Length: 141
Image (cartoon, rainbow, N blue to C red; front, side, top):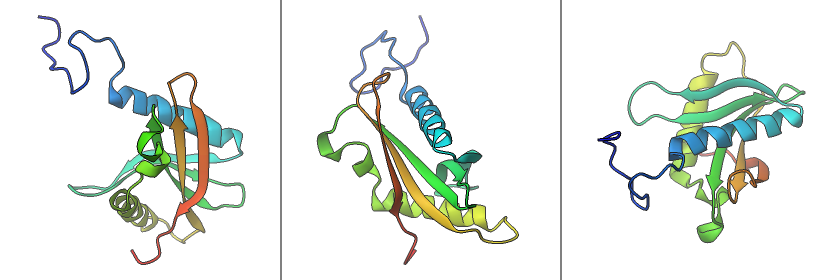
């Protein structure tokens, strides 16, 4: 028996395609490189809140003016259903905001903040990067 792993829906047995997690990691690496090329500095990668039901932030970046940027990275092969950017639901936004507040509680003072989305559209290796600064706000949450 090879790995004993059961193929996921849409995946053929014995498939050598990258797992969703591996593709996600590569997408985050691509997004990170893109944002660094725009002059941002990495503060933290894959920040998780403790406990169940919390949130996770893919990238926390800092701009040259000191703004802290909480970045959600989304990758989709297809533009159907609105593509990668449209997949950041209100529920996902709330979880990101929750995690951002948890992160900010640890800081001695609150810097200016914003929430960005970096969407990678298309096939890996030919990704089109779509960066949306200020994609959503924390008002009301």
